[in-house]
Length: 242
Ligand SMILES: [Zn+2]
Image (cartoon, rainbow, N blue to C red):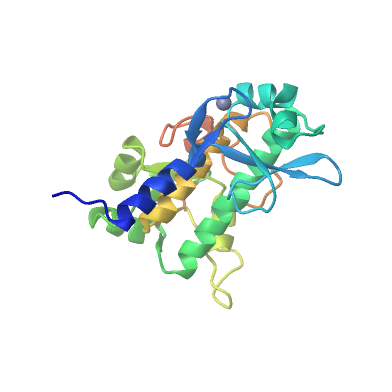
């Protein structure tokens, strides 16, 4: 006889609870496929809450130019039941900045937890051992991409081009450890959950990159609206060697 345990029930509830309606197109989607927008009631301004951690009422949007435009025309005002001050460019910029911050935080957290392999030797080793969940290659590190293991990771969509060697080094620097002047061409994230969150955050911000330059310290490829692992010419064409 089949019985539904309380665990099954709560799992079902959790799945239902994580469905949201896009304030742009009005379609339902899993919450983690949508960008959360929060309202500052005092100013009527909206802000992007990518980690979905903010307080207050939130609206949800597909991370597409189309749904952002539609939401501004009326969807956000309907969700928040008030006049909303927003424009598409600002929301797009906010999404990119929030994505860069979130990726930066995830990488720092992974480093602190010992869930990264830093430098091509350790990354290749982690790939060979099947421990690398996601490979991050600095956009100015073409040499690393010519290593066969890393080439395979790129081809299989397991890699993304991000920031540059200097800012990856800053993120990976241990407090008190060797810091200045160091460069990191490539690193691998070993934790599946963190790797998934980074890849997803990167994808979400894709449609809004290109039009905007990010002020965040880790600036993800400006040209990458592409899926993970797709080579953008600029990202991989530098001849600089680590
Ligand atoms: Zn939508």
